[in-house]
Length: 383
Ligand SMILES: Cc1cc2nc3c(=O)[nH]c(=O)nc-3n(C[C@H](O)[C@H](O)[C@H](O)COP(=O)(O)OP(=O)(O)OC[C@H]3O[C@@H](n4cnc5c(N)ncnc54)[C@H](O)[C@@H]3O)c2cc1C
Image (cartoon, rainbow, N blue to C red):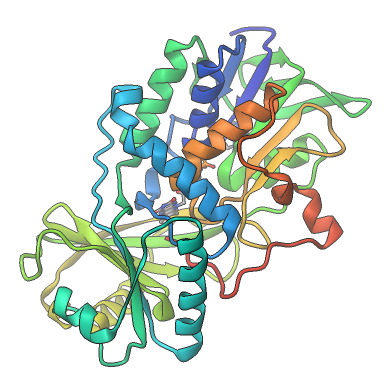
């Protein structure tokens, strides 16, 4: 392995891979990506692949719009078929408070050019008769959205990065980061030291641990989320939106001939990756409540992964203020997959000294110290 590099990326999830890809596209040389396991084996492998524009803050919508442009041309750009199924997202509001917030969100989304429809419960029932709607205030639907394959996405980014001469080392854990007088010097890995003036923390749920190595506090914590899958389920149409029952923090979509249904998200941080089969009871209750036909569903497997949550559920992007050359791309709080193209691009621009094509100043890690957290009207929904 190299003894020196120009830029080191720690973490080979979708974020590290996208940053590597965009650096390569811009002609950066001497880029090394270090992954302790295998590419994409972290949160990226566990993700539901959801891609949407219906966010409630302008900064998240800007990341969605830039990313959607990339996802729409992914195969043409990278040569890998993303399997992007544009079935739309259908958000359901139960309480009057939720409905008021949904309507305000749609105003913002319309202002930014996103064709989101506001639907009455009757309109929802007409389009998707398998949904229970009698307790709903309404819903919002946008056809630009859907879901894609995380494996395909990371393969496309990694392929492009390698073509651009990025060196990717799997099975290589970063154990320490050395800095001197507030400047990054080198990293220590299980395969030796590499000197580099620039290090990017793209360690997903481990961002806090990697931050500590450089003496930088990165307020990101891992929260377990479980997902379950049913056996083939022929009782509803093959093509349905990704449906989000906001009130129950529950969602489902097609997964092949079966269904993917969300399980609980823990309320406390941990690195527990086990599946609780008791969680299946909650899953079954939520499923049958919203889709009564799902009493026929057979839940037959599941897995758990980590959201990497920041204190205001927004990403942390930029150079660490007290450590020159240490860049953070962390805290995506459940939507890092869908925003990875835009994150990769703005991080590459920033690192190479260009003006980022999205203004990311509000995402600086310093906002927590300064008390400038980003406000969301309701707790952010997380896929
Ligand atoms: C159940 C679930 C469903 C989700 N669904 C969606 C969705 O529908 N849409 C969406 O946009 N997002 C979704 N997400 C969130 C999404 O998966 C994450 O935001 C995204 O994958 C984060 O990517 P990452 O590259 O930052 O992290 P990761 O994929 O976790 O990658 C970080 C990598 O860093 C490596 N690493 C850590 N420490 C070190 C070290 N010291 N040395 C070397 N390597 C190291 C890890 O091994 C890991 O591979 C979901 C998450 C979960 C858990």
